[in-house]
Image (cartoon, rainbow, N blue to C red):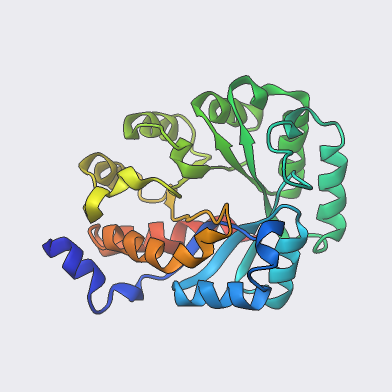
Length: 265
């Protein structure tokens, strides 16, 4: 209880947050204007957000309003329902190439994703082409993958950073650590990982991992459905609670510093 009270008291909001997992997809457009989305990010204490959307027009609309606050990430999905088949769709790479050139203009996107892959799907010809596209444009890949999927992605290029969504969703801390030690290009965001701090108290296994690899983790929330927008302040309040249980320099790196380095051109 002492840790929770300390984390949620005066000064808890001074942890600057860069949220690495935000979507502004079509199903949210009628409920939240781009202006209201920016307002919700402000209320939640998010200084910058990595935004990817289905379709990409959602990201463009927010980026046009606040390019200094939005890190644009390009999804391979043009419409809902493509998450399970994009990896074998030969039209995906030409679509991505066109958006990189014209969606926001050359150099404006910083990553490709967040996309879904499972197991051997990450070894498809389309995924190899996407990884090569990321290499040529200096972009990172943001993947919602299982362990086999992220391992396959890391094998595709020696130069492309991979941001692992949800720390694999169910991967144990020991598994995450094994992969971090295997590849210096692997970075991890923690959206929806309630096991990091059950009941508001940082789990010892995750705490040890954060202290061993303080430059590899990032904060994420994941507005995958519209109702998540209203939850942002509470989600990030809970995130700050466990961040404040780490040394201040480690907490700030996970809260924003690591993400800002990834976002830099």
